[in-house]
Length: 246
Image (cartoon, rainbow, N blue to C red):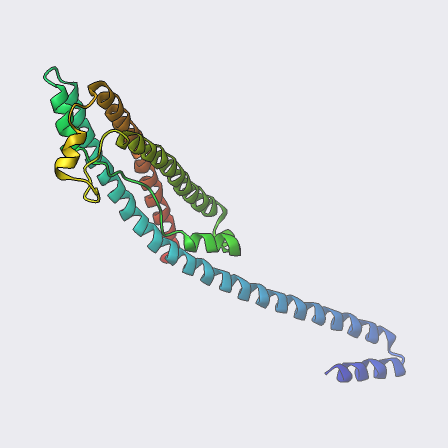
């Protein structure tokens, strides 16, 4: 093809048809430019089409993960509410005028639930992969920011939960130095454990049990934040489903 056009140009020059040659050369340049523009357009179209497929795939993955997170957040909120109710019940009984040391001994020895609720989101691998690969930036800028914001809040709640849990574990360890906590893993039970509860220091028990329950309650102050997180999670799901339905 190149030889064909070159032969035409040479023939025009030989025949001294310079003006015709010039017009032909310009036309040839225009055709080359048009060809380049068509090639670029096709390349851009292919790139855009490939990016749309990536966005759609990642949207599906995020939707599945966020649906699991919604179930998880609701589960955490329900468990926190249950334990808050238990703590409130203990508070009412121990703060009443009828409360005695025996009341506290009964609660501390037989009723107190040492388990607590922690926050640990487990469906974040896909999000982290999108961030590392840069694919997260293929979403619209507002949606990209919303995704970042939500997962940063996940990280925030995990950090706060871990800090509160460490404080609570320290309170349990301090408490158990003097008073055993009901636990099926206890090595010593029966009469030997009974000896630990004989002639206890009432003031020490009151102080340490109060510190223990306060430490546990502080860990649940984030419940209202979880409610807001659930709303943001639901809002992001709505936006991602718009992509799913395109």
